[in-house]
Length: 278
Image (cartoon, rainbow, N blue to C red):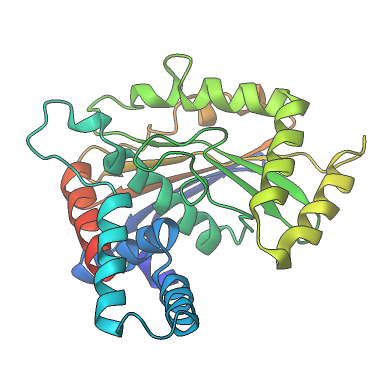
């Protein structure tokens, strides 16, 4: 998994880190990200196991081939697809969601965080944007810390792109809002506990206890920006690098992930492949 990301640059300033990685440009990458999409939307292994058990209890009313076809139908109904003929490609769910899924993988792989639950997996309406913090994670060692990650994808020629610091929905505005609001932390921990696996419920409960104390470790602001390689500039970190004290006492750990080609083409390939691997 770690070979998926190739370090381009890394800068540390007063404890804040700014990293840029190239994401491996080959068909294997598309397959791997498609499997992540599929797992978050459908989780075919779990479905196949459940369908086989259900079929056995029903007296083997469905052959394996029928179960496979049924799972294909489920995948086709829940995994969104790009409409490459649409006028506003940048607003389509797969185009923006693939950035969140890459961030989900990169944060686990590169920053070794624990993500108790995925917004994509637990979203209320398939194909619609997720709600809440894009990615809420925990660092367990050496001390428990909350990780707040806002994720954006941008092909904007400007550097930094507008999604970093312009408007109420920017990384800057959303990160500051969530870091300053204790209720956000409590809501995210509660949501994580509700949706996480049984194995991680105790870890989330421990985090709630430790992070509620006055001497709790400060959070980590971990924005992730996904960019076509041609659009990236080393100034893309914007205000997070120019004025990191705005997020105090949080430590900033900003990731830029550079993709080959366009965001739209990559999302189109990944989500089409996700239906096939289900």
